[in-house]
Image (cartoon, rainbow, N blue to C red; front, side, top):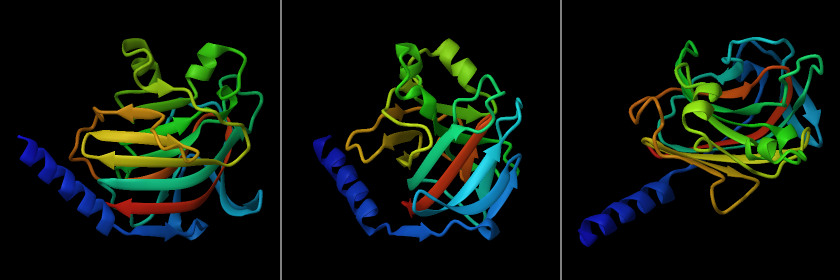
Length: 223
């Protein structure tokens, strides 16, 4: 049994070591917007894509989908900054994140996102909801929080409108979210709701009432 485990571990390390990170310059030409406005800018000394979802909407598919990306297992790294774009939207928290294994029509995907305004809130319950996993369309955050409290959310320190470094590591049914160069994951999901076979795109995702910036994207594919 130990030999089999060691062999599997060596195979995993070899796979990761030979995988090469691909740096992707984010431009409007490489992105397909769904329910968002899309522009380029210089934000806090970085070339960035800026997305905005200014309206209250129940559609959680607001994203800019990268063209010609087929992702299954690997690592996604990006700098992002989220803030409330429309203060009239009561539910706005500056929601910003990365959708992965996205269907070409955005009808299904896995997603990690952050709530930057929760990171240093005085309310401890809000702080505990700083990071979130959801699976569209059957497992929105409301369902996961109600049926599995605390399992798909966690705390991480973050500040609205400031760059936050995100790393997502995906392998089969497991995904891990790392925040700001942490050596240990902030949030671990061992049961991705679409299962281990789903492949698809990568989307720059934002939530209701959000203004967000994205920069410095790297993708490392394991297979």
